[in-house]
Length: 201
Image (cartoon, rainbow, N blue to C red; front, side):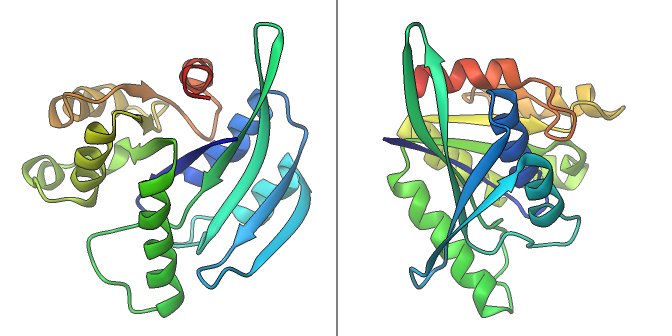
């Protein structure tokens, strides 16, 4: 089974995207497998709405370890299973909390072995400072993903007023990437994501 992973900064919309995409392709419930850095594995069953209430938050680093769900997608007459794994957000600075540092290390480790990387970038984060800085964690993920050739950027929050201008800036910053505009919250752009998934499972 192929594994697609969702990576990005803390609070970029990874968990909301993961759950709303599961809903978009027909899942009413999800079995979430939680895997900590020391390989403690637990599994919980949620409705999509329950999962969003419990797993999504505006607080930084709500997701501290890997959270995987197995989903089904119909390709012609065939149903294909794939794993979609949500991850701990990563940033440029070393976090003071050990659990989060280890969660970030998990994310980086999974990126090396995942079959495809969805890199979520929050369009509201695109500032003058961001545009001028070639050393952000997003650049590091992009540079790695482009070499892997199994990578796409999900430009999140396309629903906010300044998004279209920032989307143009994002395209200029990361010119070699496939960029799919989405709203993780409002489930916009998920048809294009589904097409991308279908090509890579």
